[in-house]
Image (cartoon, rainbow, N blue to C red; front, side, top):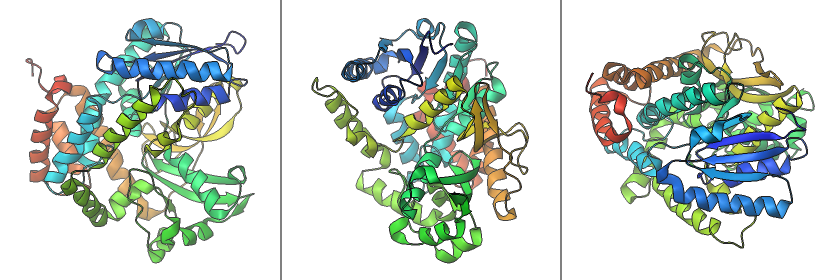
Length: 443
């Protein structure tokens, strides 16, 4: 890989509605990251969307006037040959599987969400074997490539890849810290570049431990602002419930939007059940939005990423993915928030566990910074979710019913062992087509 020769990127799940944002990211950074080939790869079920997205990507590149060739293919092995970077943004079972992930738990009165609790477990069980197969192909066809995973649940998937794959050049990315950084800068009325935040935790369970503006610690001021209902940090897929001032002061850390599932469980569940009974869970809203986006993408008059894409919960992820690639290519050694092996960054978690922390990123990839000791009052939640992730990864790899039940039962959003087994059985049956490891004849 050299900038002079140009860079080859392969995107698995290329028919995703997020792809135009990724293309925009490469166009914006073309001088720093001259991507000469972008291969968009999908499966037969996503073929039509792949061609629509590919055509839009070519129009975007033509309008920008950059020397970037877009390829679309269903042949993953052909695409991977000689790749420098592989990005993954796939959804096994498409949005219909996400609807099941949300609806079955809600039918039993527990949270249904695509990355947390029962829904998150089943997204991982379907996804991890596919990512491990992709990693095998990378070892064969482009062993020096970096695998940059955005597929959710990103932290758990990255954990499985680093624990069970021979390919170890793996980085998990998420847009949540990026969005928090952007929102906090806006909240403070300052430029984003003047704000720096120390992040430590797990994917979708990350805390801002310190916030600085031009080197001055303003964490207390940010926590005070966050207690204002008008200032709530949230995502498109999470209700912007306000935080209590006393709670935030006691916590002493900036929670990410997903912490509402653990600290405001009752209210979040009430919000989800209202949507469930009205027939409009988040998955169903997203499915409608996807249909509208692809209708826009089909227009030959569209040559840029449409603003409607920002209504998706993963908006701006391309800035994270493209920034990682740019830092590796240019050896910038800047600080980014990534999912990597812990290696002592968070003292309360195992050395080999995947964590989401500030990293220095250069030509050799990310190096996690030491985030020190986290407050005692967050140890338990972090360790509980990490234990769930490691058991869930084992279940996905082995197809063990017992390990899947254990993962379901130890997750804090599933409050009862008997209920865990009921939901597990129903979801296994509903997703049988995408879970061959649990239904093989040799088991």
